[in-house]
Length: 146
Image (cartoon, rainbow, N blue to C red; front, top):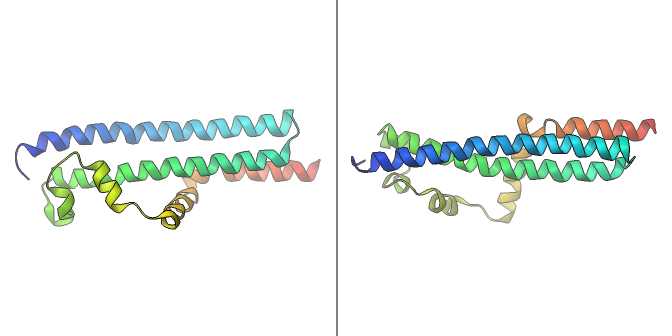
């Protein structure tokens, strides 16, 4: 890595890290919104079955959001490796220069089935599944009590 690339990679790291943190905040917002909407639908409007659909949609949206965040995280790791100047662990096509997030993302982007598979994998991670699984259990429990 040349000396002029280091400031570019540092700038890219700062930008990506800020975005990564921002995605985390919005994921929390999706979860809080899901809790609020589910509670309104179940306890105020007695729309238990509809709330299952809404929670499922918000859960998938959270998974999609976390998939985007995961891609930023992957690029952050590449940039961090390049900053450490350890090219043995950095794919050659990503090491040449900084500011290659979109190019790298497009080159590694899977087709529709692979993309759906990524979303499902993200949705099953405990930090994504919570609180959506609990909300679904709450709604199902409320449906049986009613």
